[in-house]
Image (cartoon, rainbow, N blue to C red; front, side, top):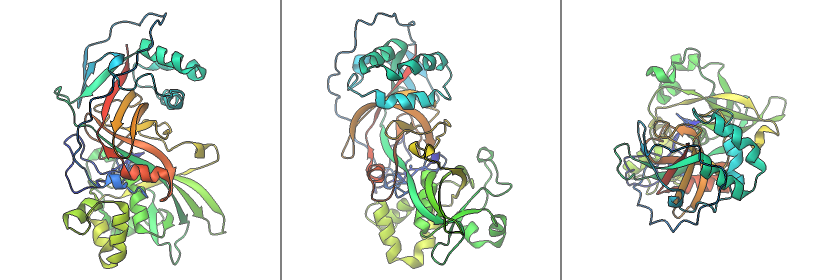
Length: 412
């Protein structure tokens, strides 16, 4: 699930995150990877972050573990966009207080596609799914080494945490008098995202006969609101209740299947730069669109990127899990994050600490996704779950934009 995040303030984002908040990721790219959140408010624009206050003293680490550690770990590990510096478990704020059983399912999901070096760790982790918290903590301490994530040159990072989610929308299989906004499957011959080639822009798709001819017969479903379609594209995935021609309503999941190769641009940033809105929230964007219907296309076309989808069935079992992220495993609400894979590999357990108006937490999460705006050493997008515009999952994703600290937990 590749998504984008949207900025929500008029200030510029820290260098580590060219972000947009929940609206951000394109499925974009997580896509994103997070539309009622629509990119979600958070995704709209980047905003400068303030450093976290000094963390409270960590609780005593579990001691007296009988099994010896597998061996010494390197003091420093260098990645393309980050440097990892080994620390003691006592340096992790809040370590020992997290309800690890809530994260264990995400850990085991990640073990379906283990990161290099995690095969043996995953084999040991599976039986511990029914273990108590103390045993799980002790095993993590014995088996993994914590590393503080810094900038690639060793500088202290300006970390940024945003959020994304999976919107739930209503649609029609065929266009109707009120549902006229198409969601497309990839056209034949769409260049690969890695090719660097660009297909038609969003404006060209809407206006050029040759672009429309290339997409003829590729519409999966039709929405009533073009902003809902934009949000879905930014989040990179969504649950859609499609009304079929015979009247049946079929729930499906639309998953990210590609994009047109153009860079993602935040519509919230575009409106802020013009002074059209004072804060880049989706509520503000929608209000502006209602008041300026003659300029709606102009706003939408300011983001040239268009995302294409794949329709997946959504049965009762699949509905209990999130969409598949870039690691190709289902995301877990509150425990899966999108990261820059050049900083943290997919499948890596990560200790996350953040304090701000939307969320204060210290918890174990898994790096399982990415997004077009998720770039930098300490840059993460928290998957908050799925829901509609009035649900907490959207509200958290839309408002989450605050300082962040990360520690990777790597096999010894």
